[in-house]
Length: 503
Image (cartoon, rainbow, N blue to C red; front, side, top):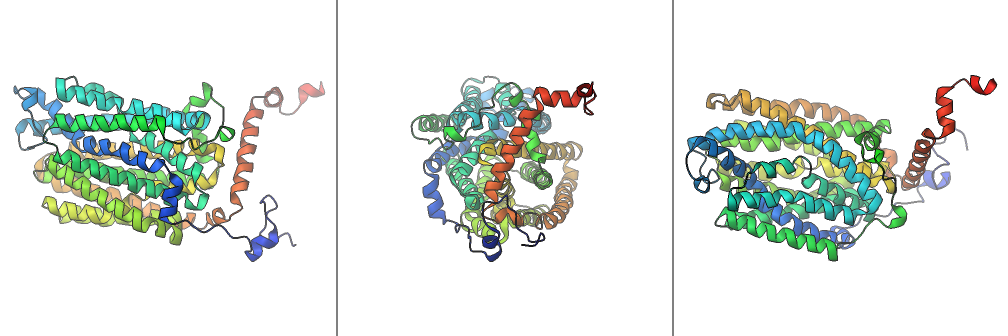
C-alpha cells in the first residue's frame, strides 16, 4: 500500500479491514441491557443517594440556623430559618453563609487537589469496593456531626470541616471507574448517564421524604438509617469490578502526591483540550447551580420548602433527560454534541430565570425544563476521556477529571460569592442576576469554539481498534516513568553528551 494510506500497523487489525469497514464495532446496548450489566451498582447507587437527598437541600438552612445564633437571644432549638427567611437574624446569617461559601470555595480545590488524585491511586491499586467503602464511611462523618448539631446543638463547625476533603464527588469518581471497568468503550457515557439518572431518582425520593418529615430531628434520623444500610450493602453484596490482574500496584508516598497523578490530564494535546473544556463547563455550572438559589432568596421569600421543591424539579428534569435523551444524543452526535447541548441549555435557563421569574412556581418550571441537559458535561467528558487511557489507568483518569471539575467549580463559587458580597443590598438584586447571565454567556462562547475544533480531533477514538493502542501507550508511559529513575537515565541527565564515558 502507498505510504499515504490512512492505516496504522500499531492497530490490531489489517489495513484492508479498516478501509473497507468489514470490522464493525459492537452496537450500543439498550438501557435495560446496561442496567443488567451494571448489576449491584444500580441498587447501591439508589440506596446511597436517598440520605443525600434528605439532608443536602436543608444543609444551607442548617448553616443559617447556626450563624443566626449570633444575632438573637432565642434558644437554638427555636431558630427556624428553614421555615421563615424574613426574620432579621436569618437575613444577617445569610451574609455569613455567603462568606462561608467563599471560604469553602477557596479551601475545597486545595483539599480536593490532595484527596481526589489519591482516591484514583487507591482505587487502581486496591480495587473499587475497598476504596468506595472507606470513602463512603468517612464522607458520612459529616452526617454524624449534623446529627449532633440537630439533637444536642453540638458545634456545626465540625460538619463544615469535613466537607472540603470528602464529599459526594469522591464517591462519583469511584463509581464512574466501576462503570468503565464493566462496560465497553461505546457504552461508557450512556452507562454513566444511567447511573446519574438513578442517583437523581433516589435523590428525589430523599427529597420527598425530607419534605414529608415533620422536623429536622426526624429527617436526620431517617437519613442516618439509610446510610447504615448502604454501608452494609457495600460490605456484603457490592461487586469488585477491578480484578487483581488489572490493578496497578504503584502505591508509595510519591504516588499519593497530586503532581504524580495529574499529568495524565495533559499527556496529549487532545486530553489537555478536553481538560480545559471540562474546567470551563464546571465554572459555568457552579456559578449557575450555586448562585441561583441564593439569588432567589434575595429576590423573594425563598424558604426551605421552596428549596426542596426546586431540587425535585431539577432532579425530575435530570431523570427524564438522562433516561430518555442522553443516550440518544451521545449515539447520534457524540459526547461533544452532548456537551454543546449542555452549554446552550445553561444559557436558555439563566436568561428567563433573571429576566422573568418573580414567583417560586416560575423558577420550578424553568429549572424543570433545562436542568437535565445542563448536567451533561461531566458524564460526557468522563466517557470520552475513558477512551483515551488504558484499563489500568481509569481510576487515575476519573479522579484527575473530578479534580479539574472541583477546582474550576470552586472558582465559579468564589466569583459568585464576590458578586453576592458586592451586590448584597436589595436594590442590587437585578444586577446580581445579570452578573450570573454574563458569567454563562462568555464562557459558553469559548466552549462552542473549542467544541468545533475538538469535533475534528476525536473521530479516531470511535474506531474499534483504538483501545489496544491505548493499552500500548499506557505501557510505554509506565516504562518511560521507570526509566526516569534508572541509573542509566540519571547518568544521561548528568552527562548528556557522554563526556564521562569518553574519558
